[in-house]
Structures are given as structure tokens and as C-alpha cells.
Image 1 (cartoon, rainbow, N blue to C red):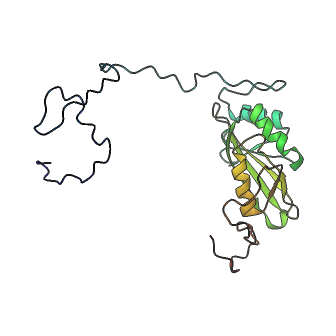
Image 2 (image 1 turned 120 degrees about the vertical axis):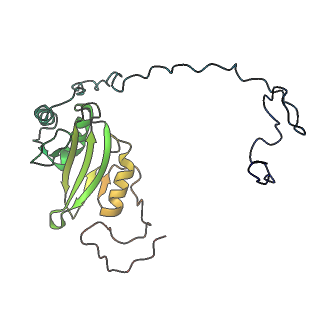
Image 3 (image 1 turned 180 degrees about the vertical axis):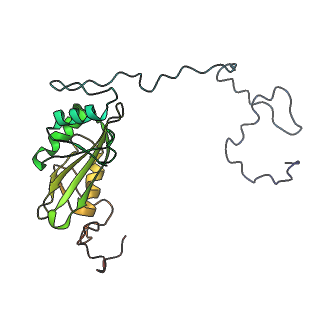
Length: 230
């Protein structure tokens, strides 16, 4: 404090009254003696750290009984398309036709096969990372429910889409397969009005319960006066 010419705080923030630790008989005048607390452990000389295992050294998960073992080797584009076609029974396509990439494949499945397709992508293709779920409003053509899954071992990225009508706007919930779908389906319901059948707690997430309309629908009246957000 003499060097910096600062003032001593009126109240010590932490460990008040403990006294110096391990002063080794070198005390400033006016300071209390060593508290006498024993060492937690003997001091150790610094050494080389432990060996860190490789990121991909862990054994891959085994598929559920009756299912094909999940893919764990890096896939080429042709192999990825063939695996998706075999697992889902639909023909996938690249997100960018000019630059096809196994990390960005898209597959459109019928609504009645939505849950089965997502389960096959998880168990057969090894896409266990649930990235996101949302919807796209096509106005007169209804809504696309969009789900993105990834296999972090092989780099396979799969976007699944299914169409729901504007009148019903009901889709099976994916919460039995992915717990993270709980929040994303609530957000999708809150902003698009798509109801997810089988969801354990389907209610608004961002807006109050008495909010009228669904803000991300293309027919949502932006100019209409609404109650203040609380």
C-alpha cells in the first residue's frame, strides 16, 4: 500500500481474521502470528501433464437391438446418399445443388413417417446430435417442419422436412427421441402456431399466454396493435 499509496478497504472481502498463511517466521511488525493450519498436502514439483486421449478414441455407441449398427467412419457423398436412402426410404438431395456435400443433405418425408424417419436417422445413421427444429410458412401451401440432425463422428449432416396443412398444423412430437426438442417445439408453437402432438408441456415460451396470433406467420398483422410485452 505504501508503493501504490492506496487506502486500506474498511472491510476485507474474504477470509477475514485468518492471519497470514505459511509466514515461515518472517513477519512484519504488527501482523498476527501464523494461524497454524496444517498443509492440505505436501508441495509437489511441477511435472509433465497426463496424456490426453484422442477425440475419436472412444468406442462408438451400439445400435439398439434389431437395428443396423450406426455409421462411425467418414462418409463420401455417394455413401452418405446411399445410407440415407436405405435408412429412410427417400431420396436425399444436397442443400446446394451446385456444391453437394455429405454434411448438408436434405430429405423430405411424409408426415405419417416423421417420427420413424427421425428415429432411423438417430439409430441407424448415428445422427445423435439434435441441432434445431423450426418451421417455414409457405402461406397457401401450409408449413414445413424442419429438423436438423448430425453425426459428429462421420460429419453427416441431415435436414429432415415434413409438410403440415395450414388448417390443422399438427405434427408428432420428437420429445420421446430427443429431450432438447421440448424447448424447440414450444418455440415453434409459440411463433408459428404448429401444435406438436404428444408434447408433455406445449405452451408459449417467449410470449405471454394471452398473446393473439403467431408472429412468424406470413399472415400475421404487424400493424395490428397488441398488448405490451410483459
